[in-house]
Image (cartoon, rainbow, N blue to C red; front, side, top):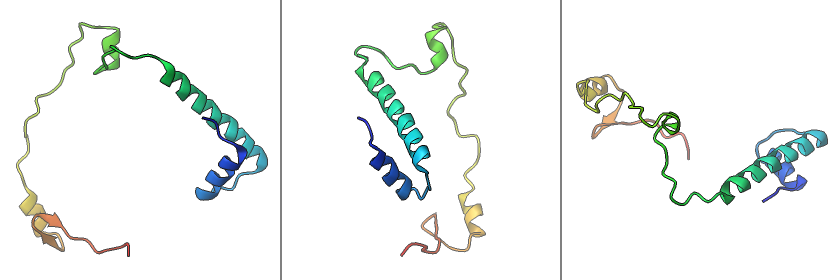
Length: 100
């Protein structure tokens, strides 16, 4: 996939970024370079390759990660916090509607 200069100009208009023609051309080159890299990565066959849980594990397979146990260490104080909230309902904070 590659972009055209009109695509960059449309994107800059949607993002409300004012680009000169030179900046648009430079951005086009950079974006097309990124898309080319993504296409190269997509072409690699990764069948049978297991994902790593940590990048250093590829270099040090005997590495044991120091992970803490997933246990609750703090008491549930939701009721205490919601007592000072302006409005709550069924354990949820009520906020004013800001989008019509």
